[in-house]
Image (cartoon, rainbow, N blue to C red; front, side, top):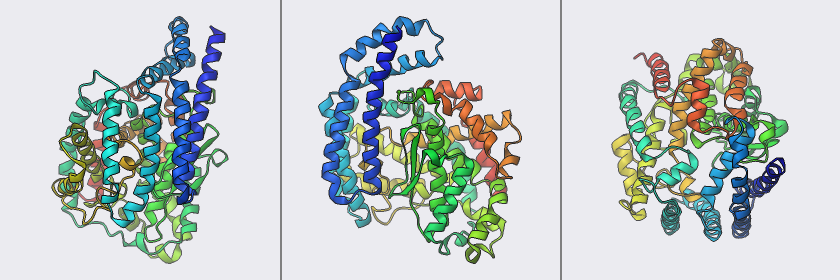
Length: 501
């Protein structure tokens, strides 16, 4: 059995390396690649995707997993080896349903669509990507059809990102959250908005990047195993335990954009850097689900970096770095500015209270597209109508409407957005559990110290990688299943105090 286990690890390691090579090419495409490389890059990614898929679906791998089943059953379920065999079998059974040539077509299409979207959004030209998005919807439906037995066509796509979740679970969860948040949003937005003019006084790019990266390092992001670069749409990417990179974007007329993007992506990267070294090169060496992954970025971005204790410590340092812009701005004014609540058009710029409304709109539109109830040609108007009815403001153009998110133009339609709100919910639940275990954490944040929080997250979440499902991990870390209560309590307390509710 030991020899078979080593053979399994060797095979899985090759698949991991091929996927890492593809990720490097995708990172390069999003950061430094000249536009002229798009066609070749699509071909290269298609080749790597096909080779990885062929190895992932090799019948010999399936036989090996079957032969290892008795060994798996003899081990504790939470052991590394049992978890590896279990997750590898789950991946194999999923991957063998999809033909390699279909995977290659999707990779080629995604690479082409990313370049088309990169040109279409600044040009406000939805027409130039409409036919491509129609193909994306069709590809998404075809992919779902490889997985029969689901109640809803979106379920297989959701399951790929958030294993164990489906439409029948998410719809009522989101409805319950919306029911609790809408009155709070209405109460807050009925008050005069916070003055955030101090964030728009002109902040040099280099200084913004330096400050954000310093904070990320203080939190625990290891630059010996990472780096930061600029891109159009910020992301984090993992090539190995020793190479987890983040990207950000910078606007000199908005101090908050680069800073909170950096902290957000560092949250993702710290998760990946914290995976146990013995899991590297295996299917276990990544975050367990999109929702849990997002919980880590939102925890550091919102519950830590937008908190009052955080800025009590770091605001004097920020003032010293930008004395001309912030020298006359009080801590109270700045704290309210970075927590300003307003009805807005852009998801990535949205505040904590309204953010989930943006996500729910996208989730609903995805379902309608996949169900065939909404045609791509009608998507821009459907988008505007949902924003008008749900958020009270409609985009004046497609650039800040249906073109604003990269997900549908560099990926699939379906399964792309639910993880954001699941992550918001879990971020408060995990933070609440960490503070219960270590009540000193809020005071430590007020001193610029994050080792206790980072250590709890590493021990209870990061190191496990994909060993446990999101539900299992939440139960182990929090002693309870997924619940909106800590999240609603956190938002109610914070914004009730800020806006005198």
